Image (tube, rainbow, N blue to C red; front, side, top):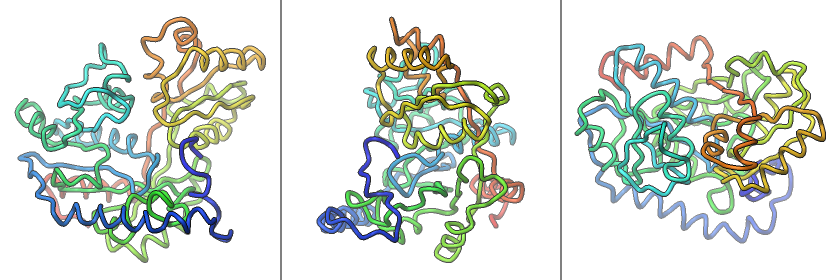
Length: 350
């Protein structure tokens, strides 16, 4: 569980509802009403390019950025020229700003945009409509891939995919702030054209049947499944590691290292988008020395270490990165391709 989210969000469903949840429900009702009201009043900009949006139903990470990257790679394989559009959470630049992965730093543009920019041209813009116009005016892209933004009303989408983490699901089923849902579940399902459920690490042969079955009862569109898979993770087997991660769900990363056969001597979970301090780096390096272990982190964390000096620079130099890609089940990979083709106007969806 991420460090900046309340512990009651993901308590088992058979436990008694905490008093704090009951107290926060009026605020959740107001929040949910405000989201729905915003959609009722919205006049979204319709871009001249197809817009494919990848988003979450809950606060926190589910694997949407790896899915956005996979979709961009598939689009490129189809002969398209994708460009990413993202808010740049954690960055200071409001945009529209074209990300330069060689000179930009996470403090300015956010960590996820730097990951995206390694795959395709990326625009950071808090105003998504302005960001879409910037991509259109550049004239180089043929399709926009919007990383996050399912609840954003500024830009019309041609395909909206909601990503759900099978292990965490919808938590306690409550809306912010009483729970992790970004609005009422029924309302949000109406915003999505498809749902992709990401299996927890180590469960590739055991699809998350409970959450998938529930969604297939509640959601009329395609419900797909995929698993996070390490790129070149063979070096992990037998390695003694100290794992650190400042992502929405650090335990997901730690579990993957263990599933790959790593000896996880210590873990350092940090808040999502955490800005590393010298003290953080010194602590992780000390743990690695004490356990005679390799510091291991995520691609997203590594970009936040870039440009650091002293202990931060040393940590970056000594750390290994476990890169992760998202792999849909074979049948669902074909269905995903069909959905992408439909968004491009090439084929009927199914």
